[in-house]
Image (cartoon, rainbow, N blue to C red):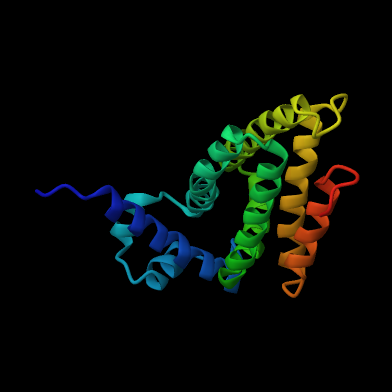
Length: 201
């Protein structure tokens, strides 16, 4: 029996995630059934259950997918000689990602996923793991910026990290409530706030 390639596996998982997100956006997390998802994906029930046991696993996988897609960007930011600029560039990329994700109503779905995680410990653990990785890596970049005098050294790096991550998730929440929000203006404001005093934004 031929082995299934990693590319095929990744593509099939993403096909299921995308189908589930379309269903969640239309009907809501709890109203969507697994049957809705495999019909939306044009797959057999067995094909879907081969990859995911249920809806909460699909949501968890989507958060992990977003993280895996940004790993190289975070690594490049950590390795940069200009940590503050790399942090600004990283946030800009993530903000733009939220714009493109709006086509799938991903923000609305993710907000539902956050709510479900509060009563679903396995899903909460999965989301927390991704969030903690974001926090730790962002804090590392901030410490590097502090060492270069780009960010006030007295500030707690973890606190600054949490604040910046709140800007990202806060934008996602606002887009879920108001899809017409001007993301470019939001990103410009964040860039201006991060620039040291006296430097052009």
